[in-house]
Length: 206
Image 1 (cartoon, helix red, strand yellow):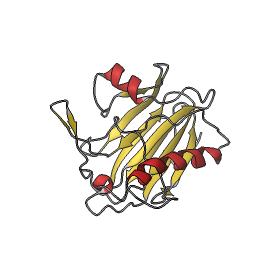
Image 2 (image 1 turned 90 degrees about the vertical axis):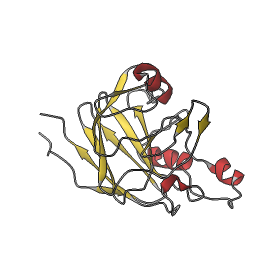
Image 3 (image 1 turned 45 degrees about the vertical axis):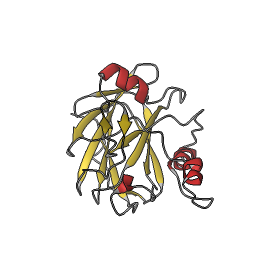
Image 4 (image 1 turned 120 degrees about the horizontal axis):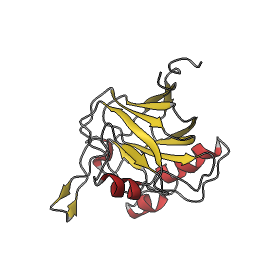
């Protein structure tokens, strides 16, 4: 029987990490400093063309973002993860694509700016996984208010230092996290300063 939890590890500011989870295991992601958005993906390790889908999750939940107790669905409408715990106010985002080199070019940043798109690929390469595409992520703690179903805004997160989310694997999968490098808009707080977050793997529930 594995230990109840692994030691905490760090996703460095602007960087990414990926971990394999067996069905029944979970990952606990901690917003260490309170203002950091974490772009989060999952892919089936049996077939990486099956991935966590924000489009299907919205369709199945009839919500703009999942809440504690909800399942998160794959592009094949299979239950892939469960949001077992969320200690934050519960504001997340499923609408925005991850940042990439083209976003930063549009903002006038010099080439080579860190981005979640590249973090996704680098993190999965470390596990020997080559995904066919970069899906839209679950943007943990990202605050994108919707007004009258017509306008979107970018606001600082309302999460607090130490807030955490536990995602329980409902199939064997790889979970990818990127401590979003965005430093142009207040996605990572009013100071526009990306920060590290912590995570650990939790054993199967008893």
